Image (cartoon, rainbow, N blue to C red; front, side):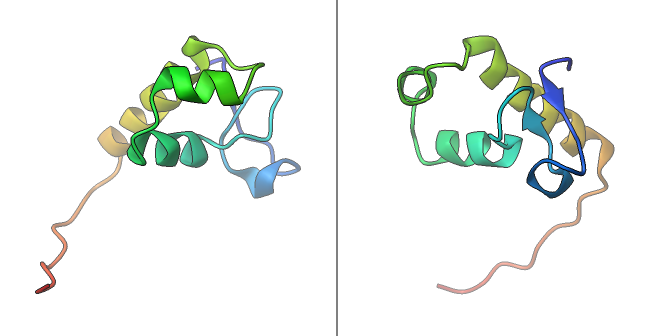
Length: 76
């Protein structure tokens, strides 16, 4: 996890890719919008594949450590 850092002075303490202002949340949202790792790497030249994988690992760790509850289904 040495690629991810939290600093209250950067992005209000949200976890970011070290040396950037790109939050883990933002990278995960890009992947959720169906952007590929290659797309993200083309857009953000300083990033490495390992940075994106570190974001995924960070998110997995948070999910593993967090007690989740089922959300009620909303009729569409």
